[in-house]
Image (cartoon, rainbow, N blue to C red; front, side, top):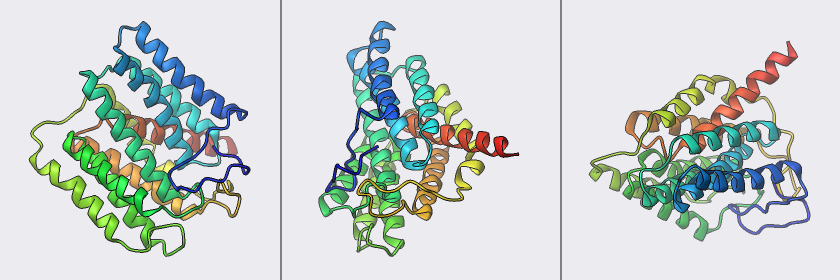
Length: 272
């Protein structure tokens, strides 16, 4: 997503170089989602949910599959169509669903370490705050992703993860506390179908052999095991969303997982 000339200082920050065709597609897809949402009768908040959700699906797929822009394109298209067919219940719900989607995106970016720097303490605390907010808004599965990502990143034992596990533990606690008091959940049939599609192709998605893409700082190849951890965490979050509820907020994540899995299946079929 970034170029070697841009040198981000934050693990969660990636620039969008519009000279890159895949990035142009992402920006165009987000704008198309906003405009099509308005034309289809969605509110401004709902249209923002459609456009930004499509972008979130694209960006999440780039974290799960850094080597192939095609899987991100598939994720963007899937979420764009789902967003138009599955409008949020209210303007507030639209914003809450975007919070869940981008919380999952940021968590996976940290775990895959695609930028190439360790997360700062403010970034880790921001993820913990996001977990608390997601849990408070009944997006239970999304609320658990930041803590799990921080802990998994810490266990990698390299210089790209948190040096201490406590921010991960704190984020998990923050995400869990509100869910214990939640009385309702946010789900829909299209969101559940997207989640089930992601789980169907999950075996292909998690069977990653190698990653050739380099981090944004161009200092090293993106670690295969980190990307695999992101895919495993994504699959678990999608499954949890189906079981515990909150699949709508994770619909962009489901679309990303499905896009990656389908691309992996297509690639393997093409090599036979």
